[in-house]
Amino acid sequence: MKIVFAFLAAILLPALLITAWYLYGQFVTFEHDDPYIWVRTRGFLAICITVSAGFVVFLGLPTYFLLRKLNSVNWWATLISGFVLGAIPMAIFTWPLRYREMKTSASVNGVKTMIDGVPTLDGWLQFLQGVSFLGVCGMVGALAFWLAAPNKPLKQDK
Image (tube, rainbow, N blue to C red; front, side, top):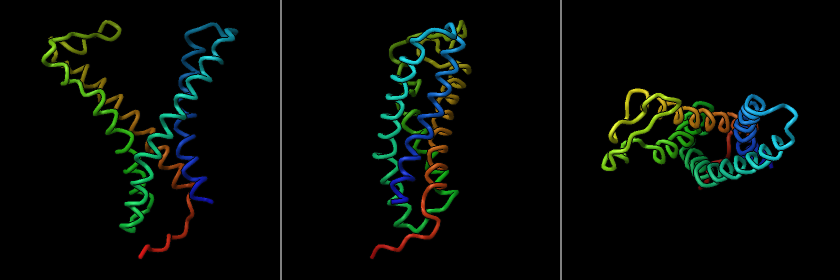
């Protein structure tokens, strides 16, 4: 039962942290008495929980079983796995070089991030920032899992 709680913690903690960050942005952007802040935040929380659950079920669960089979379920392997599992999908889906043939240009807040399909230094930094952010979210989920999981070693499967 503790392992189920650990997986639920791995789903909920990153989702709640990202939602808290979103809620802060809502209060900065809109008037504090805007009742739709809570409506938007509730919808955003539902999306975050769904995405986080997908990451944990489709990436975290197989990784946990692999680490368990290798007898490597320890704090550092869990944290590294969480970072990698959070960062790699973001890196794949936001890879900036996929627009090379299209010769597109882009800017964020007036800063050019891509010129003729080639990312600028600011574009690469933005890419690394996004990848690192989701990597840290994965690491937070892995930390929540590690802290909630049973502390005694699991029996080896034969």
